[in-house]
Amino acid sequence: MAVSQAIPITRHPYADGSYKKMLIDGKWVDAASGKKFETHNPATGELLASVAEGDAEDINRAVAAARRAFEGPWSKVKPFERQNMLLKLAELVEANFEELSQLDTLDMGAPISRTRGNRLRALGMLRYYAGQATAIHGETIENSLPGEIFSYTLKEPIGVVGAIIPWNGPLTASIWKIGPAIATGCTVVLKPAEESPLTSLRIGELCMEAGIPPGVVNVVPGYGETAGTALASHPDVDKVAFTGSHVTGQSIIRASAGNLKRVSLELGGKSPDIVFADADLDAAVPGAAMAVFANSGQICSAGTRLFVEQKVYDEFVGRVAEFGKKLQVGNGLDPNTQIGPLVSQQQMDRVSGYLDIGQKEGAKALAGGGRLTEGALSKGYFVQPTVFANVQDNMRIAQEEIFGPVISAISFKDPEELIKRANATTFGLGSGVWTTNVSKAHQVAKALRAGSVWVNCYQAMDPAVPFGGYKMSGYGRESGKQHVEEYLNVKAVWIKTA
Image 1 (cartoon, one colour):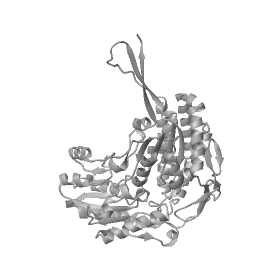
Image 2: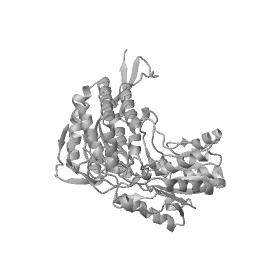
Image 3: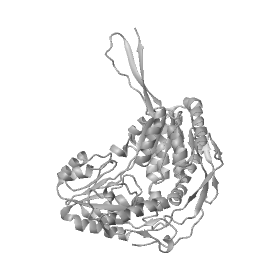
Image 4: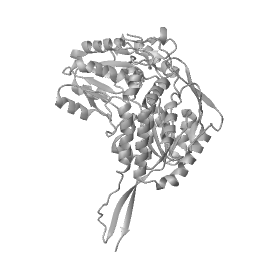
């Protein structure tokens, strides 16, 4: 396994150790309590910034600002104007994309090659939502009542949206929540993850520069148990859009009961990635490996349960392990880095715990299996890309979401039994199928209980294609027309004309 060398650190203009305020009603303000928290580079431990720590009072201020905007000037803004604001924001994100990419890398550790690679996705989402802003419409419906009664529907913005995002992709996660809110005429209070708040705050600056009115986009960094809980339970929030763990998702559902606010949840996963013996193994090896190792495994839909047909199991899993051993691990700012650090000490402890559990359960680590601490990696949260072989379905490493670069390789022989085993999980977010047999691909894709099925690829995403989960992976969809619908209410209108 290659380890990148220490590289000179150039201070990022937005991560220079200074203090960052929160955005409420178009103004940069301190937390009401005056509290701050620090955010650090997970590759080096370096202080990036201190950040205003929001709690319930700050959420109250932000929600009040969002409500004033929603019921005031923002309600008069036409779809064409909202579209122009989103297009202007896209221009600003494009102009500042290198800075935003570096900020994501610094704050949560992803390799710069990955964060730069999000360019098409980030810009595509903003421009897709801009297009949707002028495509919202109701319909006329012929009813069967006697007499002359005309019926039609209106699509109306749901109102104030509380958006809570995770730390594993701050730029695209922020856009995924802000974009549809602006497109539909909603207002939003965004609570970024405390591990990586800087990109969301910078996006707040760009929103103001794009001409989005005060109160339409508010950014309140803080901790989940304080700011997040206050947002999810706030009586004047009409909808919560959450991405994160299923445990937190359950707590948000409970918190939403006070005013029965609309909730959409994109939660965790333990996704099956299935390799048949007839697959193009040369393509499937890197495909299956990076379905987990990308972003150090910190992706909710990662294909962490690798099912491999018995007749090619030893060969294929061995090749995936060798692939993992050759990946370059290091500081994400090094353009040669392929695997960056985990985001925090807490995540490091979690993943390390599962590495111990896997070996105690009898799985064999063909690659990795531990932390990396040598040289330039000594101050960061680095874990080796790990491939566990001889994994059984009932092992914890095959059932529980690890959220790290850890593959659990499982053998199968009977294709019919395979479907039951692949679906035998509380989650249902992503899944993969590797085969050259078109009929088999269609049959398995239909049988899998998951929101996305990737065939001969993994993690393909597009702004026009919906993404979301089954079962404990949540409900609602992001991207596509279905995403926009999540931010709209449908009103039926009846007019008796005679």
